[in-house]
Image 1 (cartoon, one colour):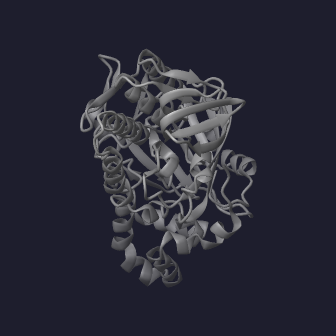
Image 2 (cartoon, helix red, strand yellow; image 1 turned 180 degrees about the vertical axis):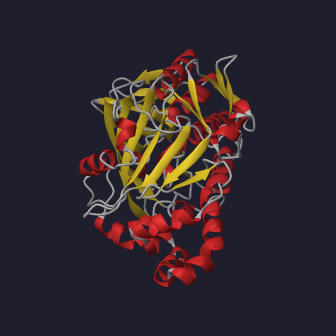
Image 3 (cartoon, one colour; image 1 turned 135 degrees about the vertical axis):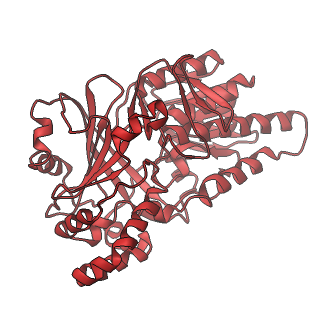
Length: 447
């Protein structure tokens, strides 16, 4: 016999936990269904960063309220409990294969501004998940871990969810089961989306790493493997003394273990890891699509990474879950009062205005494509020409504008000294779909 609720939320990440808590605090019966047996433990690679901290991202300027142990979103008008530590990053350092560095911000200058000089804050995601789960349970949310959803079907009164031998019925369903959402695939919500690639990562938590600037967010394009190019990331974790390092590729031919070994042997980076020890290794495969345009289908709403091109990061996921939770709560209230149901349309309008039409997802997907166009030596040359730091930023949507302006400023020099390279850079005027066509052909999504 199916358990009956007002709302079923599938997925207990930041989006699903916030959505479930919102519906519960509005007085409705909520079932939170999650595949993991322990919701608070990470079992896939995640950098766990919040959004860019010094500019609007996802239409808010979050605040780390350490005094009251809250993470606040003042533009949207809500906060969540978080009683763990943070680590601030003050600049974004980009490295070329040969070790030339371009800075987005200067750490020393940003640190002088104190907390308001950070470009991002990094919480301990496992502590955040524990805090969000506690808040959801405090709002009478019933939590069902270890449920692998296998079927979603419409009923006369709403939606039925089945998995792992259990069945749940609700008037509404919030799908918050991530970028590789099974629910979106089951319900045909991925139809019409353009598939770009899989964003694959092999990541480690390290102790004892000694980078030249401990408070910088670092990434770069290392020397190309025979199979294809890859990138690396390195930045401090909230937990004292730990760093998160990952090798990432959008090319399915790249062996990530070989890429990691290659990165750690590079003359520039090897000294950073001389005294380092691996603490934990995790991996992730993320399907990259053009966005889901319509934020609901029937009585199913999407939240978090489900409809995004790439992951929304923690802040964007929680904002999305907050909006979805209020939308179904208002829809239920409208139904109970026998009023016209308008809440879902308002949620859909918000999704289109705030995400689908606001950010260029094709431009977002251009962030990793330079290494598909240029050879490692050419990337070295390009980076060597950029002498002045760019503005401090960790916004994946606006950093392309800064890089684009830097490259336009250098165009006359490159055209005169490296005409063949100048011709190659002209490909950046193509769409990401066109540039990534070969990678897309070789790749396939997983759910």
